[in-house]
Image (cartoon, rainbow, N blue to C red; front, side):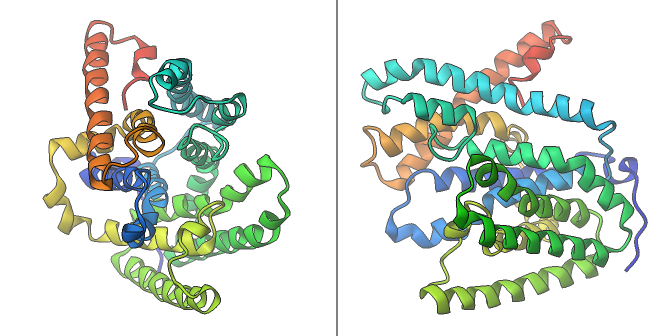
Length: 350
């Protein structure tokens, strides 16, 4: 099926609340994963594994129809916008670590953990900062992926490219991951093709025809069932989504793409149910709320409140992170009202 490329002005006449609400869903599921779910809730822990792909997918939706301009200025601006808040937050948190450790709230971080944190590693690190590396990888690929989406007029040709990216990702994971070739391969190279496929899927799904979107999601669902049967025959269980996450393998990526796509094509039905100021605010400010959840989740998972019920941990972490960021947001907005040209202050919102 052929479609014409739609200019940004026609696609993005107004902000789509569904995208913000999908980000809200993604962040909500990510925080849920971090609170230390017990075995009794392991099924929920596995099924919510679409969360990180959903965040990448929504980035694709947000960039659909847009142009990035020259590569280097785009990369410089986006890298600063993404990395600076993270490094500021992490630096303050690590400087406070000896005090928090003396109070018995968190463990004292070693030099190895601190170094891994600034490298945005999964382990060793303070935890949870690896997702920023995923966003950086996708950001580096964004101009090329947008160019592909613009050039390829056919939905099915674009979906074919996405399938090839996923195939390359799976091949590299099966081939390179067992060899343990070092942090660059493990942390960077083995994340490129899989998450690029998810981002490109988001780019295309925003303007794909309903028919082609429905057919591709049906094919993904069939593929997911086939893969689940393979997992069952190989391991005796279909709940292998988390085991396929680091680095992202096909089983994990297919599940993330499927749920993301279903949420998008059904968004007109569920958006009115979630469309309120609180959820939209969360969806528009995911990075800082995510950062603020890190110290609180470390307190309830690795600190003195580990014995709390998972539901209580979840509410505490989410509410605490949201409340602190809401205070930060109000302060920054006051600063920007007085000094609209204060570019540095803008890094502390959004």
